[in-house]
Every structure is written in structure tokens, then in C-alpha cells.
Image 1 (cartoon, one colour):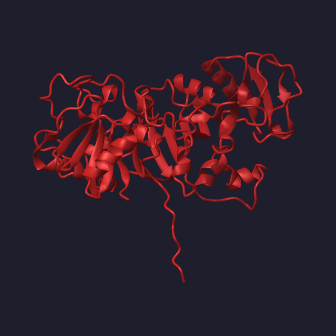
Image 2: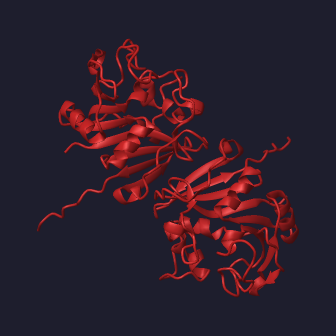
Image 3: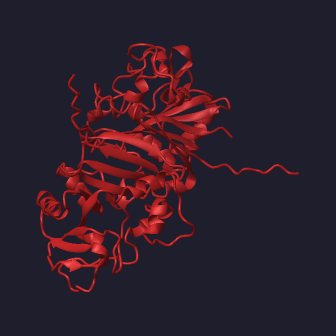
Length: 224
Length: 224
């Protein structure tokens, strides 16, 4: 069975995956760019076309950032990650934040209570607008993934819903040493989560900390 | 000036320094012993007389645990750390959790709205019951410290109050990879705290993560 993975999901020391007051020119609210600063400096993100000087770092931050796409056949994202509109689509001209040739290069399932037609972009990205609970959304995503893994792309509420439904096999969280004070918390309602995962922590010279939560698999001993 | 330090202060991934439902036989509420498990296995804690087998570990957990007492002249603790009673002292026979010869071996200032006489214990520990705000409590504690450093011993509310008042110079937080879901949060109300500290993270093979927040000092360049 293909895995369900979360990558490069940044939270503050106090557990917020986004700040308060999200809007068009501030997708992370009062957090500004601070939660993703570690990633912007990596080679991987530079090659995605993000602004910055030089070729980007190749250390542990880049190693994590770069494993984002490998073996992924589809992404599932929440409506709020796709764009700033809420409610019914008043403007179907909005095609996401990522330009004509989005970085995904796979099908992307956008969770929304307001379906609209499939949107085909350049470079292999297609947006599918789906009104479904996590289990059913995952089923629909897998049907588009060609046997590859499924990435849950966020935002906070979407990741939390898939964690609550115990659908995530791999969760890469980046702990950023800032105290945001307000916003949306990742861990809320997930008491005892650690019992379902092995957890490994790796600090980066950039100051962030990479946490990897993986679902233990039954290890079959080889027979003699 | 002597420093104000916090040591071995454990929190869950979701930021709780204690669980819900604290009582006499469960000082950390539903968290049980999970927040302090990393410390119980160290040589330092074994030598304090805590139960356990063997001589205890000597790795990074012990290095941190052991710096708890060095250079400390006084501890300040909240009433709730001293004991389970609340309100006026109905039972002055209660002399803390630590037996006749407590582990502190220094004066200890207990913050309470209900003062009682100084309590002299064996081994140099004296409990001073003081009704004061953080600034004034610190002043009284320093007067007892003989020029040495001041340790803020907890619990959560006490550490948070001293952080809010910007009185802490060194904060050692141990991030324990569990999601408690409920209890008392350390970081609440401390938005922007990182601007006042340098932050360093060190993972331990035991699975916990040591975070050290130190107040940057002005570094005077030597004159030529």
C-alpha cells in the first residue's frame, strides 16, 4: 500500500502552524515568512523558483526539503492552501498561488465544500475539487496516484484531520524556535499521538529542528 | 549580577509542563511520570535518592540534569510545587515532598499568599514563605543567595510569570515527545519570547530534546 506523507510542515515552539489574520498578502498571518524561512534558503526551494540569492544550502534542511516530491503521485490540500477565497467560488479565474506551471507536477485534490471543474495546468498539475471526508478523499486521491505515495500538503486543519483519522504514515514537522502566541495549533485534540509513531529529532545549524514521526511497521524476522 | 536560571523543565510536544488533574498521588496529573522519565534514569537523579536500578546514565541527559545545582544559592518555587494544599495552611506539619533532608541544601523561597514561619530542615535547606510579585520575590531571594545564582524551580505558572517579567537569563527546557492534550502550557502569553534569547537544541538518544535559551550578553571586544 502506498504511504500517506506530510513534509516540511513548520510549527512554532508553541505549536502554531500558522499565525492569526491570514489574508491574500499574508498567507501565514502575523507569522509572516518566519515559519518557512529555513526552507527558502535551501537548494530545493531555490530550484522551485523561490526568490533568494545564490544556489541555496545543501545541508540537513535541504535533505529534508528535497524529499518532498520523491515517490509522490498526488497531493491533498485544504481549500485555504489553494487560495484566499472562502465560501462559494466567486472567481474561478483564481488558479492557485503557483502560476501557470505549478510546482506539484501531479494531480492535486483540493478539499472544498464547493466543487468546481477539474483545472488542468501546465507541467502535469491538475486540480481536482472534492467535497469529502478524509477517508473518502484519500480513496479518491489514491485513484489518481498511479500507485505512488500521497502527500498531505496542509494547511494545519487538514493535517490535523488526517492525523485524527489515523491516516498518516510519515509526518515531518519542522520546529521553528519562535513563540507565535496565536494562530492555529497542530497538536490540538491529538492526545496520545506518540503511541502511534516512532519519533526522531535532528537539529539543524539553521536553528530549526526536524522531527520525523513514522508509523512503526511490523518487522518480520527472516526465517532460518 | 547573579543569573536567574531554570533547569530540567520538561514539557510535552504540545507545550504542557504538567497534565490535568494534579493531586497528592499524581503531582503531574494525567501526565503521570512521563515528563520526568528522562531524568529519573540519570546518575544525577539516582544520587538524589530517586528509585531506579543501576548507577544511572552519564550521557547528555545527565550532563544537563547535573548542572541543576552548580553555582545556585537559592531556589524560588510556587506554592503548588511545595505541596498539594491550597489556600490557608490547615496543616503546617507538611514540610514538602523531599523528607527531612531536602535535595536543595540552600534557602528556598516558596511563593504563597499565606505566609508561615521559616522552616529549617536538615542539610542547609530553609523554606521561606513569601507573598510577593516576581520582582520583589527575586529581590528577597537574592538577599538569601550569598551572591550566587537564583534557580526558578517551577511549576509552570511560576516559570511563566518570571518569563513574562523578563527576569530569566537561562532557561533549559526538555521537550518530551508525547502529546498530552491538556494541562498547563508553558509558552502561553509569551509571543515573541525568542527575541530575548539565543536558542540551542540538542537531541538525546533517550528521545528527548534539550532546548537551551540564554539571554545574549553584550560582548565587549578587547581594545587593541
